[in-house]
Image (cartoon, rainbow, N blue to C red; front, top):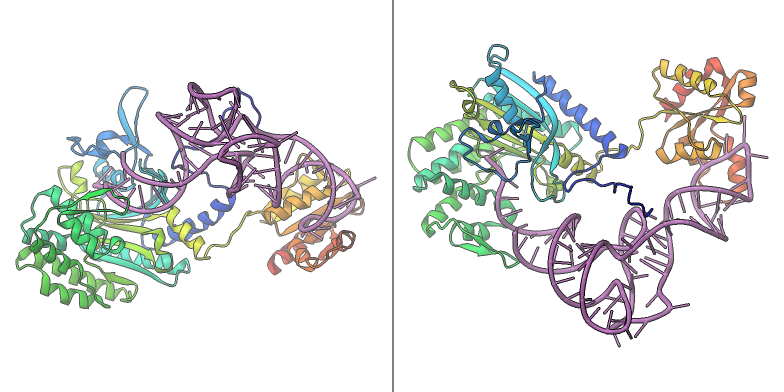
Length: 479
RNA sequence: GCCGGGGUAGCUCAGUUGGUCAGAGCGCUGGAUUGUGGAUCCAGAGGUCAAGGGUUCAACCCCCUUCCCCGGUACCA
């Protein structure tokens, strides 16, 4: 490392990541699949700014001062912040253009969001969400469709074993109300604890709902402080599980407190079950799970979350829910909405882990290389011809123009085909077309270097210029 | 935030009761090989041992402070 004070140390911010071609190429493929499915379900693309007024993100009273916000100041001194999801911007949009975005309205949006958290595995301060939202109806048929989208995404990406967990906030609301827990803070606390069930187990949840516990590191975790009786009631509720959605509904009847809130929550769940059946979503993929809570507290109805069974350590890779009150932050009249976002960074990490994403280092199909004194304009002409035929082509121009470094470049980046142009070829109006993948395979067993070089021209043909595009195309098809 | 483990070459790491301890592998560059990728062999470049302070005749090593990274936990509208 040069000891030079003028040099800036190259580095990224804590929780931010660079994506090199080998990371970004597979990622783009995933994005294309997901956005294609969004459009298939009638969602329209749009975009909103990364920066919003602080009050847009916080709500007017500034009631919640959230430490996860990346706050900034404009040059004019206005308090602003980076968006922490794409949903709030959508709600703002609905309120801002009531004449142009008339409900029902569906849109998808993709892009980076920012949260000030402690980075962990698959967890960053800047991460990318692919979001859909549907506005203008309270009908849970919309929620069912979104769940269908979640399934279709995972199926299309080749995931064989996954689970979309579904619940509705109204069930837990009814349980809490039945237990006499009415304060919002305590309700939120209970939801947080319940949501940890799968992670920490029922015994720890019992402790955290009651007196609290000491975790493995010796750190005390304060409990909600509920009585034993109430804790058991809640545990009975979240312990409900069944292989079928109908089974869960049936069991819930037994444990829910009597009353209108519980009745209507159950009716909502039943309706959702019917819609999910109508969409042909099997019980083994879409499950009702009363312990599912999710962090955001703008949710008011159904909530959902997708997990890859064989990559569960990556956490949920997509999730969402219904938020019927959020737009009323910006508008007198209320517009009910529901939505879902895919966490792209986690999803691609998990897919890579499962071996479902091919590790591509390049999108280049052909490298044009030269031997001897071949003028650059000859190279450019060849490359242009290949591109005109729709072939992704890189013309090699590097610090060293010897053949070894040119072919090494192709080998390193896994470019499948090379077009070789030497002085001989130029003189005869020919080119050499080389199948690099086949050549690699054929020479793999050669140990002696001289023999290796000798065999250099295997899997290589010399053809007339006019036949170049056709020859390249055939080679690419075979590969 | 809290608990624990770390920061030595581009990467992964070794190192010493404190005294030729500035090291290895991989990678990189050059050569063997001026029109054929890989492997091999040879050579070479690359370090203020995270930063600052302290103890000592002597510190990469011990102590203090700060920063950063990793794991767990908390938090995540």
